[in-house]
Length: 466
Image: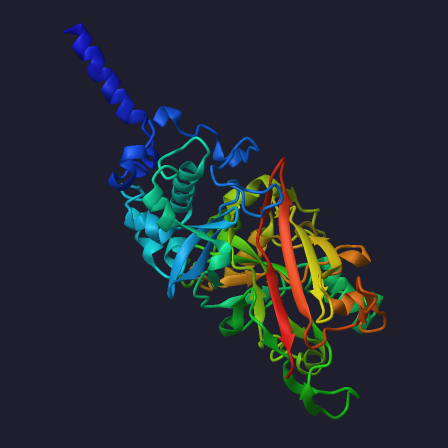
């Protein structure tokens, strides 16, 4: 009959408009509480609307609202698992994958990547998989969705307090490269050592300068580092062996590479963003006196390889996209492979604090911003591969020290103390020129939205005696 055909047509239309993510979150383990798709989240995730709320309580100044959803790896019952930060909780993707939440997905292979102990496989799947996972996770956590909220058994297994877990490195870092992409920092250092006339080396305005660092000594936030020893040459004539007396931090951002490129096939600038999984805050610890003696002619070596600290949560481009900020025009105009009308950084407010052994609270000494980078992240990645270098999922690329034009925006003690000629005042009345044993350095960063913030968590470490 006509009414029968009309009913069948409605059924077929319903199956056509049902999003894959709606089906994927209606697995048998949570089917009793799964809502009809018409009642599900209708907000455009890319809008980062302040109206988007989670049923998990999130403080206004939390780094981890539902608009963020960064990925990390945490230790739970001696097992390294992949999770997502939400408020003061960790959402256990291992548990959700086992419960079937990621079944019938188009790009996630039923979520098997979330059963692994690092993010490398997920990083390598690329943007379609990242977007699919973000949509599913956002829907599960959205305030009106009861499918996980009302499933007490699954919820008790899938949520952990962040204070109860130990964060690990988010990926196996096969290679680590550090750039030198802040013009203010490069100029300041150049003035100190070469004078204003020769502050920037001739190549600096033509390419993103970088060097290959040591991946094995990249550590997660909270790892303490021993003061390094090495060759020093205080009189610029005869070296001596001893512990570094000019130990410094460097305020940086870093990004993890997503899908790889084949050896011999560079990543074009217009495709570079698709190869960036997400960002962390980074401290590229530096022994300035060791560095001064060793860096000619090949650059840093032992002065940098004793430790690099990153924040444990990786914030994705989907979370950061609303905070893109166009970079200033580059003069001279870069060579064609580095040219674009869409060069950007992010409006990430960056802060560095020091807490001495005598302090109860840390003392903020730097307020800077990622917008001060001269070379963009996509230019860094493109230049890295222009020779045909092959990148791998989980490779880490640092921005270089980020300094702004004003003294309180300088991203290192080398600049703040102007090569040790000035004292850096701390809140308790004490001073520093460089780091002492027992000093804890805490670096944080966040983007401020309307009613929420997108943060990275702490990047911190304490200096132990040699």
